[in-house]
Image (cartoon, rainbow, N blue to C red):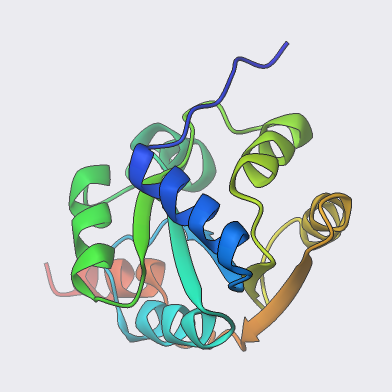
Length: 163
């Protein structure tokens, strides 16, 4: 059984305002560890897809589960601040800690009600994301073509070679 999800007040207010004013609300999510140019490029493209952009950041525990015990390099509050400091998004927030099941994702999408879920071409679980967005009348949109030559993992591996 899922617990009741609660959004930060700022995110809730932005979402409601977009619904009332018929603005196109875009949601993008990710880890955004060691913020690099590909992150900035993706978020810029996500921003261009609509009128308002909300960015959900994975929690430290979720990143450990997804990427391994030595990740993230930067803690969740630093990653939230770094993305917010780009001045691309209207709101940046932490995704729920327990965010594993289809129902968890659906609950978040129903609360935010984005018109577009912005992803890059290598986004995992694309079919599941499309199914969820279809339930609320939104769409998943590939806004950025993944550049396999630039990633946080590659940055970490390069720095380890020099240590």
